Length: 278
Ligand code: 13P
Ligand code: ZN
Image (cartoon, rainbow, N blue to C red; front, side):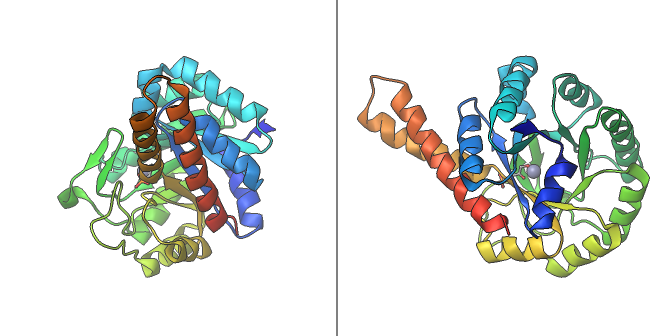
């Protein structure tokens, strides 16, 4: 149907008090499975490519493949780079047809974070491309983003308001208790903090590290102003376990294992969209 930017897609989700699922593409064949699930749910989706995949696949070829999937799909699709870390990475994505970018400069002091993000916002907005950014830091690991527990920090609501006003970002990723990767014990989200950030910033919020977070907690987060929810770990786990099982039975061909892995990812994406759709 169409490739749209994050603001347009979040408006569709907000109209039904729901949120978008954003699903990380970590190998080529995962992308069609994500789009297929969103098509069946008849709900927009964020096809999210993390830099290590783009680097491995070749940013130009991979971007064209993903954008083509988006344009041919029966639902609106946002094509976003996840945790872009540098001006150079963002420029590659802008040149290659991404409709949204995430610039994650959360490892820098706030003034440097603001300066880089504001520069990205100016360039991206001039092309109709939306920008997500992050304040506070989630612990755990996601692609090439690795944060030790000691370096993690929650988002400060007052600082978030200042950050949004200074940068003009379209969506803000917050750190309120989720982690990247598997959880040790039950995830504990700081909902009062999330509510205060939503009130003070008045922009759509993004929840990262959503694999392993309960349905009730996800829905509560959405009710407080989260409009985009990021999943990666659960997709990779589903992909790998389906592949291992199939490869144990069929060692002669490539497609059975890939198809089984695609079906497994499709069912995780279907389940998450049903939770978030509103
Ligand atoms: P999980 O891998 O914990 O699902 O986190 C996904 C994410 O935040 C991608 O940016
Ligand atoms: Zn993330």
